[in-house]
Image (spheres, rainbow, N blue to C red):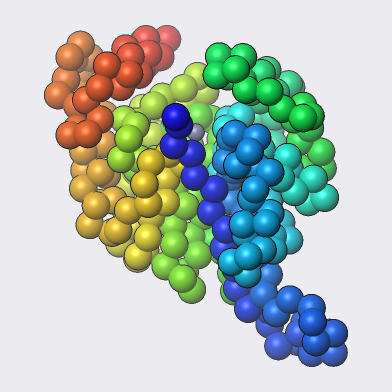
Length: 258
Ligand SMILES: [Zn+2]
């Protein structure tokens, strides 16, 4: 019904932290980036991840659109890590994520056992880095879709979580707070990261290999050129030329005119 991705990343604990710990304690640290949406997905997630050897110690959201911040519904004991621009956006728009979630839940007839509480939020500098076990995650600015946003690069396993960029199912979406110029800068910033990655996981749509993600990036730059020219009916990329994507284009045209 909807394609949303959550990505679990893990890394071995550094020798120092593993030494002296009980033998049965986990030898890896794990982090969950973004979240699934449906209540049954959220309910199944902890067991599914544990079965695959991932037990998240932390949550991170690429941006604070409602469909990316639901991790605490699956892991209520964990704090939500956010880039500082996302924390600022939360303060500017108190309750917005909760309201948007309620609206979408109403539209899809989704019932939840409990409402969304973002709980404790941890602000992280962007650009910056976060330690995960003995490895380091890079946080890169990724604004333009919204006013906030980060991309997460896990160099030790070649994974780039690109947030709501480089999707094979969605054209670039300029939401309120986003802009064409910052979207372009983000694509330029993502290009070398894609070159260095093996798997690129967007917030929506299938994970892609490097060549596919680079193709999508080129298509997105072409699309932004057409948007900037104000084309009413530009050709949309293959696989993204649906009526729904045309509606996004119409909203984009209105958004860049404001
Ligand atoms: Zn999204």
